[in-house]
Every structure is written in structure tokens, then in C-alpha cells.
Image (tube, rainbow, N blue to C red; front, side, top):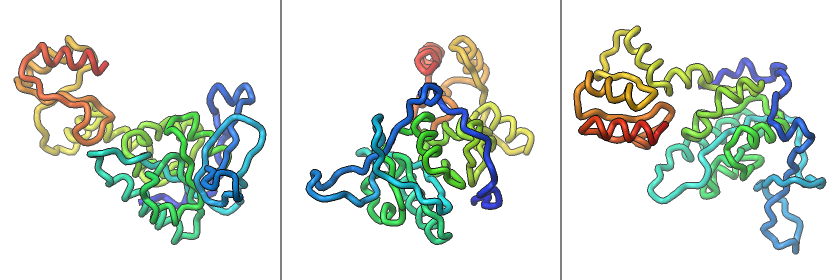
Length: 243
């Protein structure tokens, strides 16, 4: 799964986000589960903007796993399950592993194998802040669902080492137009399909394919954000809303 050869290679400096250009960088605090009665030693961590930092950063080789965040009612737990097993695997390889709002807090067994858990939004700025702090030898983005996948290319452009599936390959599978071309090149049968960027184009290709059509955007997993359209007006309205 993972390309471990690249671990430890030197990386270009992070381009970072606008806040870093002005010297605005977060510090990290341990979540206080003892109401300040006792010192907290557990691994749950939150960022804030002030002077005092409560966590140290050991020099040991580290792997960072971007997870799916909290589980919601009706949500599958396959991403959480995969992140837990990624934590097990990195622990067996004697890597420290750090998560950035990654796994759900419900996965206690997975957290036991994690050296640090960051409860942070899965945005480029927040993830880069953790990468800058921890300096991991590799980041795993493939197991947390759509949000980490959408960060893969930008993280690579910022010099973050991605282990496992290359961001370019992720984009090839996520972009429906590129993926359709790949299937054509490999002569793999697929249903009639087309890609549209504006409502008028979507209406035209829907007519060419034949109604009803299944309309869904690129860069989504499972059945999210899709609709079965039985007429051209529905196609146009959906594409307008999605755009």
C-alpha cells in the first residue's frame, strides 16, 4: 500500500497559508479532562492562538493519518475502521503516529495506538500547521474519506510527503472525465456517460445519453450529492445548484 522508500527524504519548505506569512501560528494545548485539578497527560490536543504550548514534539520518525472526524448517525464507519488499522500498522513499524481531527473519538482502541490526536478542522491551513509542528516522515490521506482526499494535491504542492496512493492517482480516479478516458484507453466497458461544467451543456449531453440519467459531481464518495433526473429541467437545476 505505502511507498516507504520516500520516508525521511528532505522536503521543500511549506508554502503555508496567509496567516503564517504574518507570523500568526497556533500553539497546541492538551484537552483538560481533569478541570485543572490534576495535570493532564493524555494525547487529545487542540490548537489555539497564544504563547504557551503544552506539547512537546519527539524527534522519532512519525506518520500522520488524516481521518474522517466524528461519526454521525447514519454514517458508515469504514473510514474510521481503516484509520484505526493504519494506526496499528504504523505502530508495528515502530513509527509514532499523529492524527489531525482525524479519527472519531469513539475509536478508543485506535487511539490507544496513536501517540497524539489532534482535534482540528480538516482544512489545508490546519493540517499544514500540524505538519509544520510534527514534521512527519509521511502523511496518509486515503483512509479518511472525501475531505482528506480533496487535500491530497495541495498538500503535495506544499512539500508534504504523501505515502500510499499518489495524489495524481487519486485525482485520476476522482475526476470523472479523466477516469472515463482511462477506461476508454484500457478498453473497459462503461455505461454511456459525459461530463458537463454548465447547466446548458449538461442538458445537451443528457439528451444525447437518453433520459433518465444519473447526475453526480466529481470528487464525492458513495451516493452523496447525486440525483436521478427524468427530465432536462431537473438536470439543469441540479447542475446549477451543484456549481
